Image (cartoon, rainbow, N blue to C red; front, side):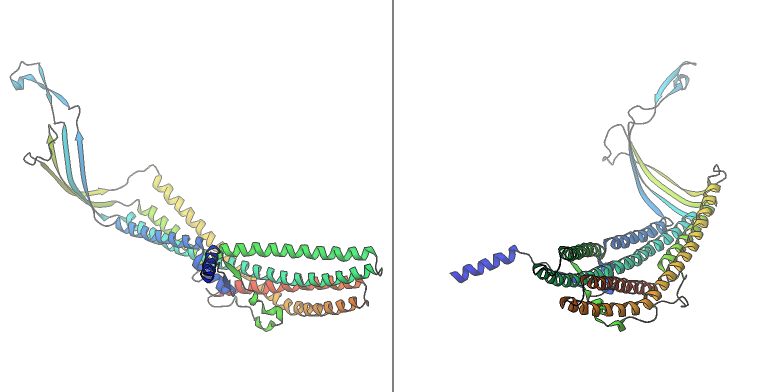
Length: 450
């Protein structure tokens, strides 16, 4: 009985405390792939591009024969009356007799068909729909590209704040060790209150920095989770093997070259430039459409209907007659004067095409400038990294030495504090340089993948 009760208790506890699984992202590439799969903005953009595909189908359908069923029911609650000379009915000349025409109830049913034989405007609508479809696809690619950049920055920001927390925790532990020594010395009367207060003040400052880093880490992690579309994501810090001295993992050459055959300024490869080029093509198609609207159109049509006229609502009585009406023909339309609407439409479309051309040229220049800035920053950071890594390692060694000497009473607190501040400066410079190398290197790698 006791075993059974214990088993029930364990089951109750297991169901009352849900287990939350976490998705550990091992590297930045995994984070980018996860965002491409789960990001809601990207999913919405893909669905919007699918809508453009149906717009192409609708534009093509407008050029095909159209057939529709028409039906109408009329109730003439006041019938038209016409005055007829009475002499036609044997009356006297000069008199009139009122004659009522029609019946109260009319039901008409029929088929109507139209076939556009020549309509340049409809053909151009298809081309415009195709251009919009291409733009929709490219907008998704541009969003995906921007998303990759955003994920890379957020991922490394999250990982580096983890490293800041780890280093700050170590600094706080060292300061705690100093604080214990200072407290013992104060009790023995070896130091005054001023030095004791300075040590405690330094410790409080480092603790505040730790809390600030923890807050920054949580903010970066929350933003990363939103972008990748997974609320359980955590970033692994294993990507920063450089902190353990494995500096050889960094590449010596930039992952992108301005001289590459498929590289800078090639709108065939770069989503941003592809999108601008597609928008320029759309603007040119709009100009063609406005010009073709000035051309005549030719279409064929046919209608056949039958009509029933009743004094009473007895349309289901098929013994009564139905009267047929059929017509077929050609319709030719040629615009002559439209109040300069056509001219203004063409002029407006041409200006929009000029704007699209300037936007494409401007986007090329911006992209080239951004890439050059990334290359400059990457190369400079790569050159500085070796220096800052060596300085970081030397200052870490100095920190261990100064701790030993201060604990042994060889150095004063001012000397310890000078070395400690140098260590903090070296830590910050090294992590900032490492972040610049890894972030800019990844951004250049993304651009190199086009």
